[in-house]
Length: 190
Image (tube, rainbow, N blue to C red):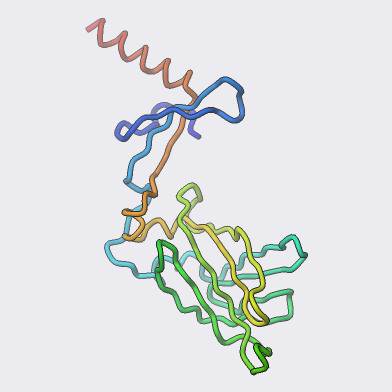
């Protein structure tokens, strides 16, 4: 939410939503399909995710399991199980799917396999650039960790423009109404 009318977009569809912080109040919002950052013409995933180099993201789930996801280093499960690195990335159903396959050895269906991580990264343009959050993770089978994350960088991919992801800015209706009344008063005075 913004508090300065100068930062409120001048183009886009205006709509109202209830303000969950103030009962009976509402916010005036504008949505447009122009992303706050520069959309890429070509989906170059390594370039898009370069801000995550040398960064790790940690989450503990309700079962007290711990996932440490590192973009360009070994990711780990419960601090001692290597999930591998050198992720392979592809875009499927509007998400960036990241998979590792060269983790520690484990047994899956009575066969030797390797631990791996499957991470779906979705678009959330409310985050600042270079920030990612893990939303959830769980163990799938004996050797796979499935996880969901959100990042702003995922919004920069051309595929996201057609998925209904919009840059939305909201302001308290009293600030909006005051600005509109002042503008109408100035227009009448001229």
